[in-house]
Length: 339
Image 1 (cartoon, rainbow, N blue to C red):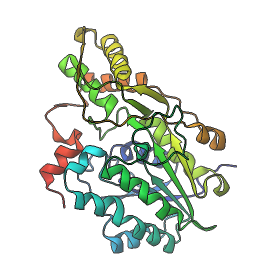
Image 2 (cartoon, rainbow, N blue to C red):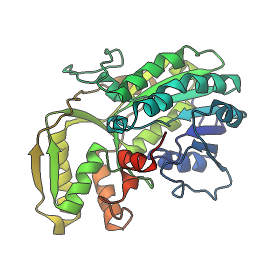
Image 3 (tube, one colour):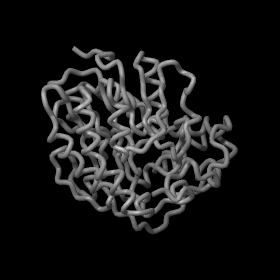
């Protein structure tokens, strides 16, 4: 039987990020004491910093001693922190390797030594690279096309090497997340296309035939909460795909066009312009396992994500959406000259 508060004290690495800014308030609302461990490249003002159950530790996950000292006394870790998404690896391959791979197992070892009982790892469905299989399940070969998905995939066996009855390890391979967050990203497929439609009146589609699985950010957070609640035997040593709508980029553009024209009729008509793409990633993930084993079925659509983004734009929550670097991981990291 699931228990949402079996793990009262939760440490979230990367908790000041795109997903973390939705996850952290949810965990607090559920009664957890939450420690956000984040280097805060993108700031932390969007977190509920005055909440009595929230602790923010502004630190680097590569500082294993600091992480080990911080994780002591926690019951569970949700590891979100990374140099996120494929284009970010344009920055510095050494930076990416050190953050996304080399410090990973030392973190796991430190968490286990500190008495943490559950470690949830955010991998990615992009580990599958290019596949024409109609159903890419968790057993599908990993075909990494970039350092990002290579390192993400290589961390999974490092985690599972430490699985034990006292230390439950689980990896999740999410689809591309979409929708509004207080620390919003506008460099993800659905969000990119919506930004263009709302603010340029034109959607640029690069390629269009590539299949991309999608997942609403609120469903993503539902998964992390579920992974804290279910019994060990359901998830120990397991990997789960989680996605909802497998759509081509061209189809996503059509959805965005229709929703934006409805939500913001003054922007209509919105044109769709197709250009060549140098990004061949295309895959259709099968998420039956998480439904079968954990009873999880996403509830929110691409359309819902686009509507929420439209309302955020209309409400002035996403100002300067093309010029402000905070919405774009690569641009922010370049400006910081992160090392």
